[in-house]
Image 1 (cartoon, rainbow, N blue to C red):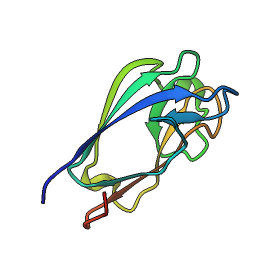
Image 2: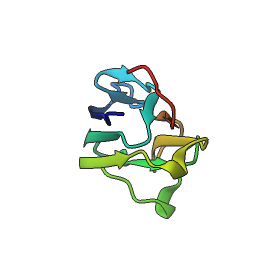
Image 3: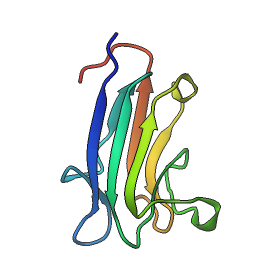
Image 4: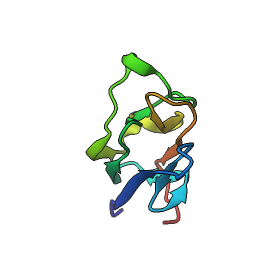
Length: 106
């Protein structure tokens, strides 16, 4: 099967409560093993990272990116696990990344 690459522009909502990916508030990201997501991040003051925490807000235990590129590739270890894009400093700004081995609708 063909692997796909997506690019998301990551910004902060005007009320500074959630991440916007390509202008959409907290979308779920669906991926298949082998797919890649490129996050173009512009979130000054709200460090973006990938985690297994549904809350985020893990502070100094995690390193986030406020500006730049983060590339995330779906691999087997993420199948059937809860993965999230979140903020290191504020809770619940992001949402789920669902990784599947099966064919999904793109």
